[in-house]
Length: 97
Image 1 (cartoon, rainbow, N blue to C red):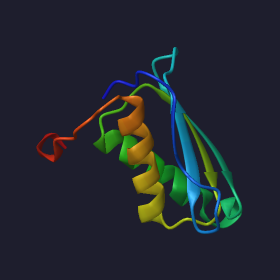
Image 2 (image 1 turned 60 degrees about the horizontal axis):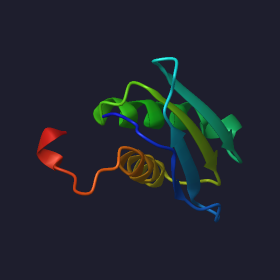
Image 3 (image 1 turned 30 degrees about the vertical axis):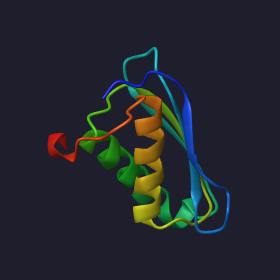
Image 4 (image 1 turned 180 degrees about the horizontal axis):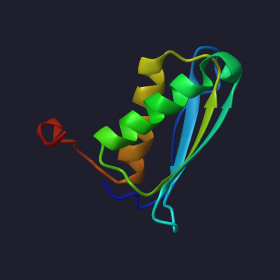
């Protein structure tokens, strides 16, 4: 999936996260994580982010994740929402993924 513009999804409420994405000029994935639980769950959050990007077939993106203790399913949903917005998808065909 091609990232066309910057986009954001989520909030900074407790048990949520805010994810921002933008196109990358370097043809790779860059993920920056800020989290209140980074010491305990930083590696798992990064793995969820990488797997979500892989499933969505995104291979060029700069992503910022600011986590306030979100569950994995919330992190995944926020990443998906930000990616869909950045790719300017109006309708998503789940059969392709």
